[in-house]
Image (cartoon, rainbow, N blue to C red; front, side):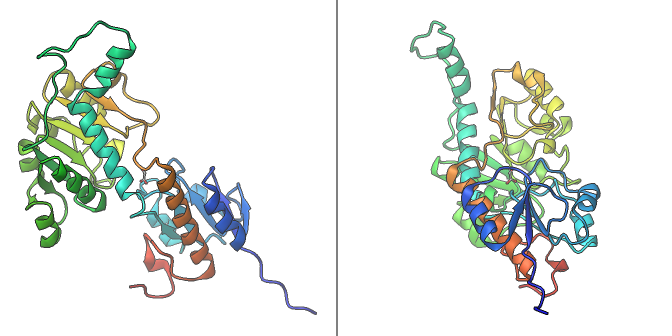
Amino acid sequence: VPPEAPQRPRFAVLRRIPEPALDLLGAAGDLQDAIAGADAALTLLYDRVDDALLDAAGPQLRCIANVAVGYDNVDVAACTARGVLVTNTPGVLTDATADLTIALMLSVTRRLGEGERLVRAGAPWSFDMFFMLGTGLAGKTLGVIGLGAIGQATARRARAFGMEVVYAGHHRVAEAVERELGGARFMSLDELLSSADVVTIHCPMTPETHHLIDAARLAQMRRTAFLVNTARGPIVDELALAAALHDGLIAGAALDVFEAEPNVHPDLLALDNVALSPHLGSATVETRTAMAVLAARNAIAAVRGEPPPTPVNPEVLPLALP
Ligand code: GLV
């Protein structure tokens, strides 16, 4: 009797992802769009990975390859308890997200959305010394909450605009990084909020950072300051933000992420001093392709029992990883 042919691994791809990633997965196994029976699943950030989804997948599931750097949609503890590896896609989206952060910062400080709405509406306008004046960035202070990869890439760009960098977070970064950022100063969140001209959020969404920026924290900001969020919506209390903007407690906000995407609080929509984009941080052809390919490589490595490039819970792996 011939030995049983080894079964091809089954990859669940729950939503459309770029072709190069599908090609990789298709060469390594069989693709399916349902979770049941999968050995690995590629998930996006609106896919809630919890016990219900893990039950639906079945006990053969080895890996959740999240196609995002953030993994607040994944119950990592539940995965770890079942020996399911979780992976994410850090690195490949750092530049794209930092670019978008700067774009939003410029958009709100230079009133680009407001200007575009005016032009498109056919409203009368003319150049004059006081028409639609914004706020310059040179010599101002950027306060980075969470100086990880994206925070650092954003700060590096802000330096090119002549900004000083201060930061708050769990840890001080390496001195070489502080030096490269022109002597970036580590400080408490309280101090950052009261001293920064632009506050930009780059921490992950965790129970600890949920509504980190609430009414009290917004009140600590300067009345001339701007808040930028390209991390996760629920880090900011959206209702409190709308009130702070309405009451002039801060000068403006730029948001790529929202508490209940794709819904945006109607109070924010009514305000002119808010720049809005629909979760576009990593939305370039190059970056989305790189993210999907990295997720595919993670999934393939996991089903082969090889070390995956970017694990979130490497403790489930049989081999100790560096
Ligand atoms: C997108 O929001 C990501 O976390 O990659």
